[in-house]
Length: 172
Image 1 (cartoon, helix red, strand yellow):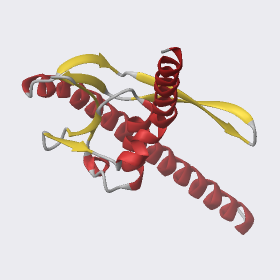
Image 2 (cartoon, rainbow, N blue to C red):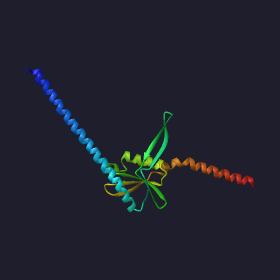
Image 3 (cartoon, rainbow, N blue to C red):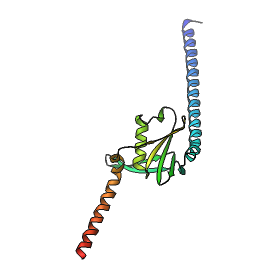
Image 4 (cartoon, rainbow, N blue to C red):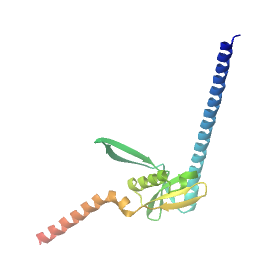
């Protein structure tokens, strides 16, 4: 056997070993992802019991909201899905269940997700449930951020009230 065949055989074996190692890593990563997803689903389901124990009535699991927006004038629609819609007393709240690093509302992605929920779900507030530590925190945003979407309705109501008052004065 000459040197060229030996090099070709060595390269082929190295390629096969590398492919096997990569395939094993992919399988391990997929298994880890499945395990995390199962754990997350399990903790999310257990959160319902914890919410009830804290006096919350569960209205809906995985409530959805949609809102329109445009990109360069082209209409688009975003779909949001929370974990739980709950009520306690007169307040309706959206609950987001998180584990691990996602529990920190200081994290940009978590904060933005909660803000988006506060803006586009018809709720009185947003709760962040830490399934690892079994803690529930209310995350509030400045009133201007959340009430900005309600401003047109309030202005319309005020304008209608003023028109009604003016009509009443003029009719007397």
